[in-house]
Amino acid sequence: MHPLVSILIPVYDDAASARLLLDRLAVEAVGLPCRLRVLFVDDGSCPAEAAALPGPTAALPRVEVLRLRRNLGHQRAIAVGLAALAAGERPDFVVVMDGDGEDDPATIAPLLAAATGGDGHTAVFAARLKRHEGAAFVIGYQLFRLLHRLLVGADVRMGNFSVLPAAVLDRVVGVSEIWNHYAAGVVHARIPIQFVPTDRGRRLAGRSKMNLPALVLHGICALSVWSDVIVARSFLVVGLVLGATLAALAGLVAVRLCAARLVPAWAMELGGWLVLLQLLLAIVGLLLALFVLGSRSAMNVLPHRDWRDYVLPGR
Image 1: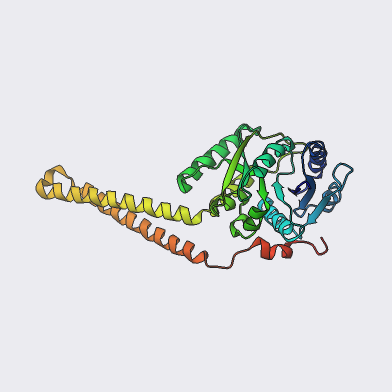
Image 2: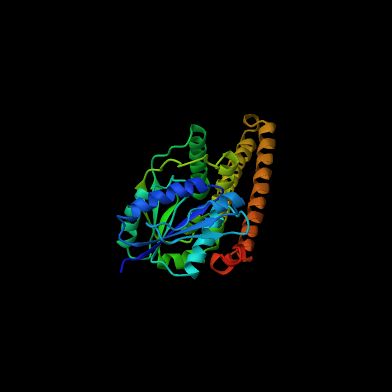
């Protein structure tokens, strides 16, 4: 029997794109050696948009809608959808993709091929190549990648478009970090990942809701997953700078003791203030580290445990 593949698509006030995307999925379904099930996660859309979401068709007889109580945001809608799939009829593979068409249905086949040919314990993600956004978005995204490399020490090269084998799905829904950012949570949980290079498609209908504030918030959510790493790296940098400052100050003191005229008094005073500033930064870094370590033991949202609280009854 062909494997069961569930396609998870979060949607918010974008029924027009969802209908066009379903048409394209129906075309691709003909060539896929699997049984397809489509699950739209309605992320608190307005009543008119929610009612306009597409249902089953002759080509795709299994199309369902999971309606959330309120708008949770793209990443949390994915987390709820994954947990719902893991708790129901367990699929052999889950495809996570956006509902606007930028994740091209034509690239599902190579992603699935990589997943089915793997060991069953590796997540397959689409590695972004060519993009079609405007210049402002591209510049903002590149700046975020630079900031991510500086703070985390690693590049970010993937979005939500991915395939999870059943064994990986069982692990992912127990990762609390996917509540803030799905892809970053998978990486942070050290789940093995394979990348398949793909180009981004173009939006099928309407306009993207990813404006500058939304992009900044999305970046903050991604970085929040790495808060422990960011604090540790920042603390090390502060320590290195403090050590260098103390060494420079010790050198100034030695030179002044040997030849007072070569080192003006203002240089000594400036060095003292620099040391004081570095000490304050070190104290702040230590407090942040303690805060992060303490928050790790706090109660977090676990998708596999809490997802039902966000779903409308009977959905």
